Image 1 (tube, rainbow, N blue to C red):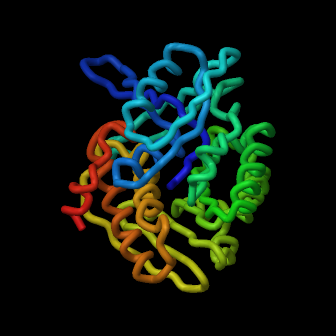
Image 2 (tube, rainbow, N blue to C red; image 1 turned 60 degrees about the vertical axis):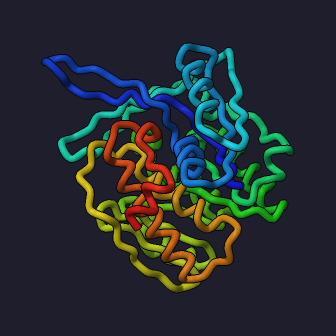
Length: 296
């Protein structure tokens, strides 16, 4: 089972229509996106996160219950508001983020209950919490707990310069969690931030590099390979990387790591990510398993 822990929030996706700019409310948050996508692709999944006691939090609570997750535990914190991310899209569907998260719920996470944690084989940890000391300590503690229990630790870098204004300081924090991870996802831009030399040094981990329309690349044990994607015309790229990564995790969960397994998993993940760009929002337009398989 894939256990995803971290931010759940609302993406307010902007668009202009009839000379009016409006925002459409969509459920989001990278680790929550991964949990929902992996469930859609046939994996057993669980999610643990936190929302505020407000109308946005109530919307997300309802949304979680509709996603077919094996387990979920979303804490409601009455002292804070639910986190928001405002998203604007360009003509190619590429997105830009602006987060509203001062003293908000995303990093005030509950400890994962034993009954959920014990069933997990992969523990996937979100990165947004690392911008706050409370969240950083939580993430490192959870990673250590997972390692001691013999579980695979997964981490998506998902670097946001709107949140981490001091890149050098943020990279130092990130590296603490990367060191504890078994599976790490970078975007092509993030390999530049962390340097290619550093990423190439992570030979004891499965490194997943998303390359957009060019597909993706896996690196493990000194070996690597690029895997092509399918051509699409994106509407909204929000959550595409999460769908890609969820596809990979769903395909390697419980399997021995071989080059064939990596190739098949990354091919699957590429299709998941590509198809998820065909509609607005990170979750609402996720393809189902049959649709993904039809494009392989």
